[in-house]
Amino acid sequence: MPHIEDEDLISLHNQIEKAETKQLELEEFLEEREKEFDQNNRIKKILSIVSLVLLIACIGAFFFKGEDAVIKQDANQDMAVFSTEMDSLKMQLRQLREDKVNLEEIKTLYLYRKLIDKDTVYSVQLRSFSTNKTSLISEKFTNMRFYSDTSYYKLSLGIFETLQEAQEFRKLLIDLGFSKNIFVISYKNGKRLRIENSVD
Image (cartoon, rainbow, N blue to C red; front, top):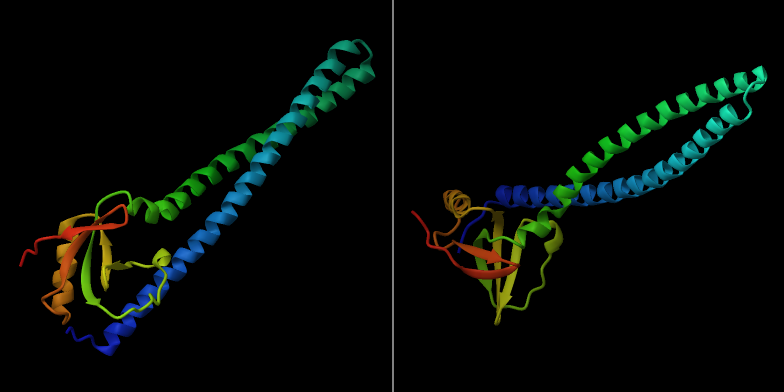
């Protein structure tokens, strides 16, 4: 049975809580950014329509009212206003494009957890137990996995892209005092595949 120092256990719990908090913050931030992005898209469409109507009105006023100097002066003023509005709209459009890039980066972070389930990932199984216990942490916000088949519950720690990374983490855990009986397992599509050979 592995022996974990209280300080290491508290540190591990603190790291897990920080990761869960960061995940929640990123999800909330992503939702806010998506709302802002949708609202900005609506505003952009409305401003485009208004600008087009103003452009048509200015062109119509300029060509159809012709020779009267007052009308030409008004048309020039309208064109100046229109030009200012167009510059403002161009700046807003640039800002929306920058916001879209930032939103894509946030979506990438948010979708990381979903992408993990599509590829083969590796984790270090620490323990299995047969009593009917419920997970005390949510699988949605953690770097730990609880896997159950038959009557056993299995606890694994870490999600790694390569077997080598998982093997290095296993060695680190053994150096920290965990049992040498811990091993690396692979998952794909959220299902456990097999126990991977350890390299000592």
